[in-house]
Image 1 (spheres, rainbow, N blue to C red):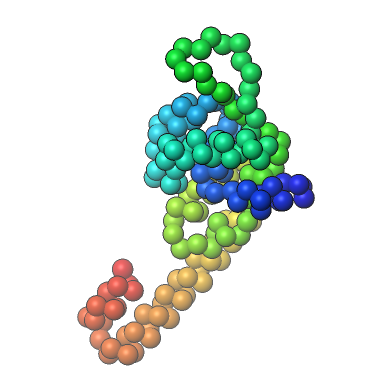
Image 2 (cartoon, one colour):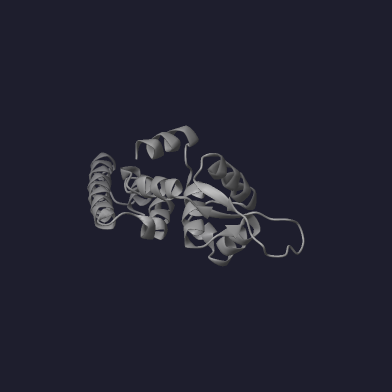
Amino acid sequence: MKKTVKAKERLGLTTPDLVLLSLLAERPMHGYQANAELVRREIKDWAAISRPQVYYSLEKLARGGMIRSLETDEPVSGPERSSFETTATGRAALADALEQEDWTTQRDKPAFLTWVALSWQARPGVFQEQLGRRQEFLEKEVAREKETLRSILKDVGHPYHEAVWMVSS
């Protein structure tokens, strides 16, 4: 496990890296297939990952030993392509990353939505733990926003001020 943590720190795994680790854990595929699958799943709705990022992440993950190239006997039609699969090190790094609290404490929705989409790779019990953290974070955010709104209303004296509209929207 220490090896995985050190690899994560050294490589600085990004959301696209984690998405690819998860995708390749489902089944081996080459970069073109991975990109096509991400497009099919409309990945841009919940994670920012571009075609060039797919290839950059594949190279980075291979260098870090988190994925490995597969040798195949399949005939190649078109350019030669390497298929990749997630290694045990990659699965462990993904599982470790999914346990990080920062997935649940960011205001932007995509981070948590990305985590939900990848959570099938989390260790047992982590889903409920992270869900509880997210609920706690959101409750604190709602309380903070309500306090901000009360403060603005107190300062401006009426609910028709643009600051009230911005905060209450």
